[in-house]
Image (tube, rainbow, N blue to C red; front, side, top):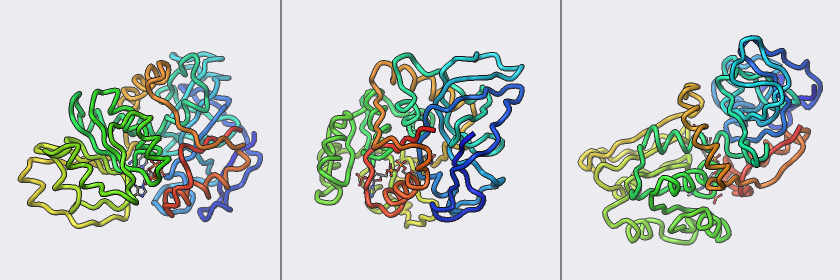
Length: 330
Ligand SMILES: NC(=O)c1ccc[n+]([C@@H]2O[C@H](COP(=O)([O-])OP(=O)(O)OC[C@H]3O[C@@H](n4cnc5c(N)ncnc54)[C@H](OP(=O)(O)O)[C@@H]3O)[C@@H](O)[C@H]2O)c1
């Protein structure tokens, strides 16, 4: 099969697009003919060797997939040949990467794709939607009527946080880096969207939530707690999930005296059961059109290196060149 893989960590050019043997499904695994995959910032950190990860070479890239089951292991109970499925959180531990024509995945990590939802759309929300769901429901326990601020509402994770917070009945204020992206955040349902390059974000938050916001979701890799904490309400929860190297100042006094809490998490640590709770909500929301995929562009898998370059430029170098997910098709 054709696959996009690496034999060593390094810049996007280390990505090889060539033939590798197709995997054989183990007892509880399905073999999936991959219809679409997508790129996440973590793929670029792993490829670049920026985070410690035990890799066996050749290492097939990719966390997410959508496709069709073509073979099942003897112990598979939930799926049959011909079923359309999606998965996230692959390419780690004993889970295969997804950037290939075929991938094997344990049925614990698989979800059916709802009728009427394309491979491209579901794969574009798989990791980012699961992340938003875990952070909002499992960690921050967002309730209807609460106010939420998400810093970076046009990004992969941020656009799902905006939409899911609205589905859960919260009031949402967010930021984006251009007037077009601000407009898009409003279309996603945010009551208020602020251009963080040209407007006073703090003033907008104070006007929207004079008592402070109940949940603060930070997608930016260098959180500024000096700014954040005075804008949080009594008993507010903050979600941090980006910025492995960030070591910001943390103003303890204003934080604990308002009974605030902070929740950090990495979605790849979630158990299959926790991911299931997310996937089983994402599916109907996608089918009903309440949660919409945002796709910047669809490329052939042979352009995996170019896709990595674009993702890196957008997220790490903060060029903001993407507006939505990069989807690749084998
Ligand atoms: N912990 C986890 O489980 C987990 C899961 C997924 C992702 N992540 C991490 O979360 C981060 C975001 O991921 P993503 O996929 O959403 O990336 P993304 O699609 O590139 O989004 C990045 C966002 O940051 C915004 N931004 C950049 N500079 C900003 C600033 N100064 N103020 C406010 N917003 C700013 C961008 O806004 P504009 O484009 O509008 O300028 C964009 O909305 C990455 O670091 C990723 O590694 C962690």
